[in-house]
Image 1: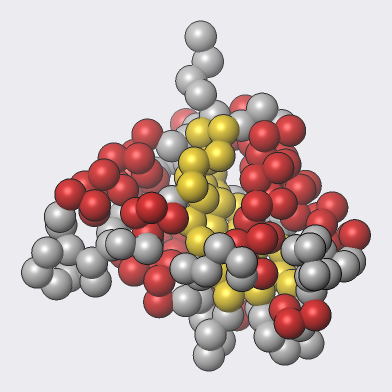
Image 2: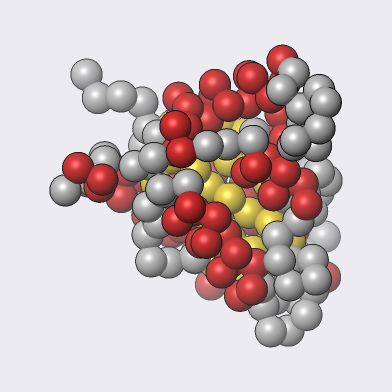
Length: 185
């Protein structure tokens, strides 16, 4: 039997109503539609100690890296702060090592307050992914002007953005299924 196609979703915002969290929820719909299983990292990410400090290797951190080691893929999303990903997401990524990630797949999305989008954050996330020996599909999603992205019900005003987010999630699962370990090619 095929291993479960579990995708660990890591959000760089601790607010469930944030545009970043909502974007990851839409991408997670794509994960499910493609046959994947989303695993939300919020219960761990929001409680992790600062990496490298006393207590950073507590039960929360051990549980988090165990789930990351079991996951077949990752979906990372972050707001852009001062040209890079949030400290919350970076701290979670700092807890991971190659032994938890090597040969797995990851997809990215980033949210910006300005009109230019979050390309610097996407570049940072791709750099971290390379260091962790992760594989990434070529598409990612950058959402500009976050303060104008959602309607009052939390739906994306731009249907094209919502479609791209769903495609991001489904494309990740399709890559995981078609090439389960690209390191062995």
